[in-house]
Image (cartoon, rainbow, N blue to C red; front, side):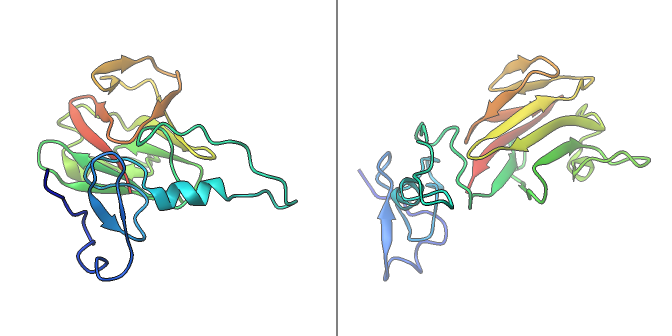
Length: 180
């Protein structure tokens, strides 16, 4: 079995690196998730196990499902368009963000119009993504053409955990979720 290298890893191989326990990919020392398979890397896991509250008591136990629902406090969210592989960074400047289309003062945090959102049936306020302590949630905002997670339609207003490597479909726009 060959070894695959994560992005930004070649420069880090001469110094410290870490190996993904799932696929044995050699990844950079500062990576939180394996960019090949999406699993959380050992360094990120160790930083979670050492966390404490300000009063010195141990933080609550984190229920990790390797590479799925856990969203590290230093992680970033990216959405990759399946049809052309364009990457959309999703910054969390606030606890919640709205994906949709900007028009006439509609307040979508992430405007998907440049990616063909209108033609693909994305509503002006399609979904909301909330960042909680160590995971993400997604809620359909009564969109006209529906929201799907891994091909399953989600009901408007019902909260679902957004997992790494999930397929998020807004109308006909298909996005791959990537934690990094």
